[in-house]
Image 1 (spheres, rainbow, N blue to C red):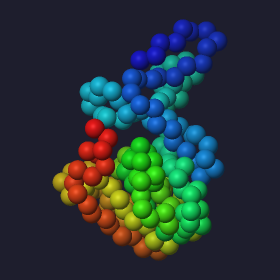
Image 2 (image 1 turned 45 degrees about the horizontal axis):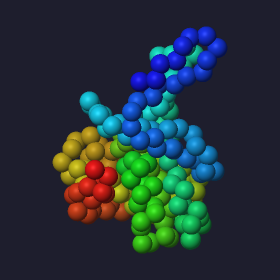
Image 3 (image 1 turned 180 degrees about the vertical axis):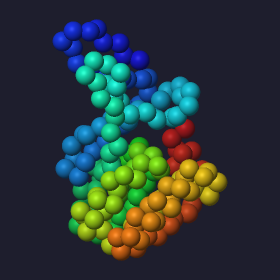
Image 4 (image 1 turned 60 degrees about the horizontal axis):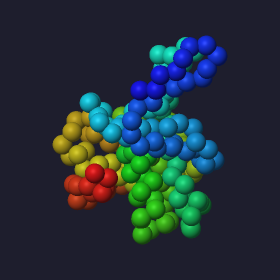
Length: 173
């Protein structure tokens, strides 16, 4: 954890791990998530200044991978919503189909703001691409239900995706 002396210094709470920039639709970095090197509870944390003088907690951001501006993705009305910015960045670069825009939630329970992003971009079809533990973990199942409800309530067609349970997680180990 970074220790900052008091006084006229600006600081933030930071942990050992991989820094993952979170970008908005204008390609600006609006937050940073950390994939922790030695997690005790959660594998990911938001960088914040919470608990420091004049500090603020990390915000819930919808992440736009940089690869969204390649090929036909920029004008697409079809989106893939992925669980996790790091996974979405890797997927966006490796995906054979460059016709869908990709958005990432910082976690499956972080659905606040996703419907606004989909609507503002004229989304007509949304692929839910959460991890396969959505079939086993109640918290992930609840995230799927929330996304489904938001899409149905806003006339966006939702399509669920399924794949090998190890998926991209085995790639990140």
